[in-house]
Image 1: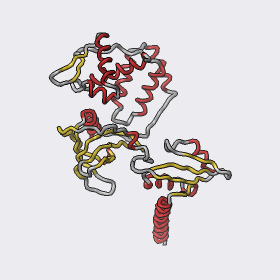
Image 2: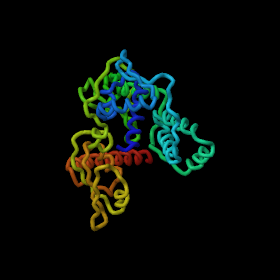
Image 3: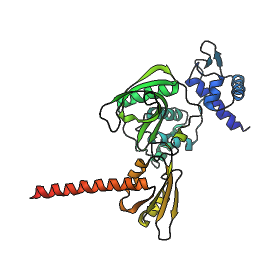
Image 4: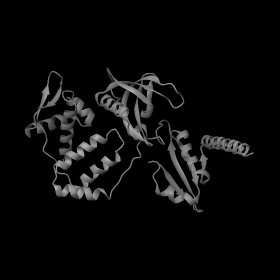
Length: 330
């Protein structure tokens, strides 16, 4: 076995126990970290031999680390420090900004002034942006509640305003995950009102509060699998979509990864056929419309009709605007 793999495992075990004191037994560690219980017991023995003061608390039926223990500082390389800096910048307007910034500051405390100054100079040459919206104080409080609910497997209650309704409704949700997609944060969880897993846009949520009720995560739940067929956010049964793009934008389509499962074929006339399996036609129709006359939906027919319908609505809007402007100038 590679020693670095074992070291990574040991650090994960220590981190999991520190984050959940008294709540992690061998079975829970094995499930959450995706190792066998036999491996967990062997690694706990290794940690004990190394002098890490881990003990089993019979009262809470879980492992704890003796109070006052801390790991020695980690000697990070310059590339690792730059990665932390970029993560901090990328998450500038996210609810996780403070956490990443705290990690970066702790890491910088373990390096010399020369290395810190070098990082400051290098940081001017790198930049990452997630185009995240600004998080208000109220939203920060809500994210703190959601993070706690997810980590402690506790049901959360909140008010939610759907996009087509003005009145907020009470929701009771078992929260599975938080994800940032298409410039917004979303909560994924089981809605006890609708009796199914739904995605909630956090900007439409308010008055989030934790419930004492707990829930069990579905066996084998994976956030990536849920969004596998989504164009942006909406999951479901995927279907094939084919779009023809004019040669004037062919390079833009070829050079960009719009979806992990996309396929792009260049034709003899320079145009391209973009193919992808997605679950929400409404989401991808907005993307098609953003390209204007250089994009044509080939299939499915339902998506063609959807795009044509939106174009007709736009024509009516602009025709009405022209009549209004003409009447005002008389």
